[in-house]
Every structure is written in structure tokens, then in C-alpha cells.
Length: 353
Image 1: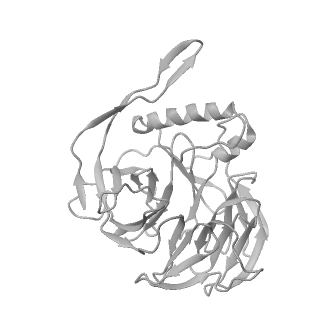
Image 2 (image 1 turned 180 degrees about the horizontal axis):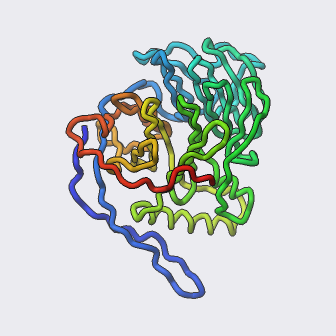
Image 3 (image 1 turned 135 degrees about the vertical axis):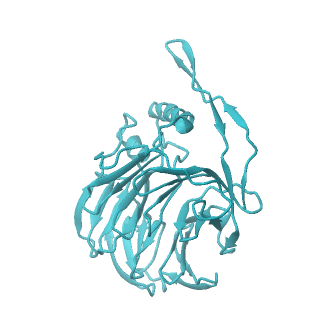
């Protein structure tokens, strides 16, 4: 169900910054809640708490990773449990604490096992094929070329590329400098990594104040950057920068709220969908904004904050911890929705950050 919310304006006091003894009031903004986007179906009712990632293969099966990250469950299209990865757990074929995974077109499953400081590869039957060491991997993407892209807390660049056998090939992607302390800056540059059928790699920064997604080709050439710095996103960006500044003056493990919590790409059009909290935004392959900001809810009215987005031809699949996996209409395809408007892209293509 999709309905226009009653027009209302909410004014929020962002923060008060003391600087040289003078209190400065951060920007106040009025935010219009655009369109409420409600789920039409609940998928995989057994899946919910601890959900970390979900993918769907060419046969329509769902692969689901949940905490504590020791197994990836495989569900048939009808929702019945159909298998698991590893198919048989042994000392050699096991997952200790998987943070992320990907499924390529051949059914190969590539897992970022941060508990083992390794990338582990399983065949379509769930049997161990190979593994290679990577310290603290956080996200992974499998390319149709057989190459594997990895992001990790300790990598020199945003992305490291390995061949199918685990041989290091190259790295690319510059970090953004947000903090003086290098370890804090590394943490702030962590993000979600996904690939599309054209072997583009998308890196969605989880914690950058301005919501940012970069696209690279497999060789490391930057082909697009979406950076949302308009008034709509300014209050959150300002509050996030203040929080970073505070954490930069402290010791101990930092705690930050995610700015981007999920990203998905249409495998046909290569349009990009970005989730920030329960707000869903849509961009075409050139980075131009399409449509409104959509607020996502289950059919029962529960707020939906997705950690994964699967873009299907006529609908979206959003997965959230702990409420589970839901089907949503695509605003650009469903009838009865306000027409999708196209806005100027927020950042120029071919920018090389």
C-alpha cells in the first residue's frame, strides 16, 4: 500500500555547539515527509533477528546470513529451507563470524569471514572450494570475471581485488579524511560493497556525514559519485560531523549511527536504490535523482530500516534486523504512485575521488 502522508512539517533542533564561548545554533530545517511505501508481502517468516545479508540467485533461491554468522541458510522460492553453507561443517569448511557474502552468476558463494580473518569460497552445492587470508574483512562482492572485491578495516584503499584463487591483483578507492586519528578515520570509511552484472563495483559509505555512494569499474576507474549534500540531508550531516569531532577527542571504541544502511542496484537498468534509516531514495544509472523520498513500513505499520535491498523487475525486497524480509512495490513501476520526477544528479560522473 502506498499513500500520500498528510502534509506536515517537523522542526528539529540539531545541536548547540560551543565555540570560543559563543553558542551557535545549528541549522533548523523543515522536513516534509513525502510518500509512505508499505510492504505488500512478508517473505521467509522464519528469518528475522540477527539478519546480516540476503541475496537471491538466478534460480530464485534466497541466501540468508544471520548472527552469529556461522551458517548461510538457503531457501527455495516458496520459502522452504533448501540447504545451507557450509553444506557440511568441518574444521576446514566452517564459518566463524561471517560479516557479509555474495553469490555470483554460477552459484559460487564468497564469504567475508571476519572471525577467521579470511575470504572463504563455496561452490553451488555448499562445499568448500578455497580460502585466502584477509584481515578483518567487512564486505565482499563477486564479479562475473571470477575476481573478488573485498573491503576491510585494515586495507590500504577502499577496495582490494583478488583473483578466483585468492591472488592479490590491485587496490583502489581513496578514503575521505574525517578524523585526525587514523584508526577512527578507517572506521568511518567502512561501507557496503556490491557488484552489478556489468562488473561495476558500488561502495556505499556507511558513516560519511553526506550520504555517499561511489561506482568503479573493475579496474578501479571511478565512473560515478552520488553525494547527497542538499538541504534535505544537511541536518543529519551536521549532527554526524559534530559526533565525529567529539569522538576524535576521546579514546576507546567509537560508536556511530549508520548514515547509509543499505544499497541495491537494478541488474537491468543499473538504477541505484539507497536506504538511509527508513528513507529510500532512487537514482538512475547516471546519478540523477528520481522520485521522492519514500518512507518504508511493513503492512502492519512497523518502521522498516533495511540492511539489504534486492531490486527485482517489478518490486523491491527489503530485509531488516530484526523484523525480517518484505516485498515492496517499486515506486517507478507501481500504478497509483506520484509520477517519478528526475532531478539533476548530485555529483558529476567520472569524478576520480
